[in-house]
Length: 130
Image (cartoon, rainbow, N blue to C red):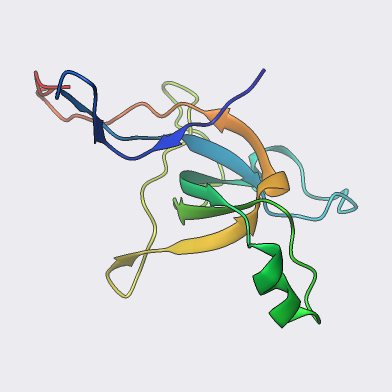
């Protein structure tokens, strides 16, 4: 089973702060009928910040629009470069910004292909704190 978590920070019953968790996912950005798009070019990385649905009483106000049952608020990362890094074979992405603000969108949950892991780029020294 593939799972992507989205949870704000909270205090447990002992009053300890449990850190937030917002997983990253691959999102399908092309129509399934597009046979020319292959490999990572079919996808884009995003961080899931919330999963929600629109209450049926509010959907009635938007009767002309078909609203999926489950939606996700995601913050995008940059598109994949044309080629992976020659030394380790991985693709480098970073947060995408629009006008200095994280680029975010609401998407249907069924566009999420799978969860993924990121490896941070620390620089010469990795921080000791998690």
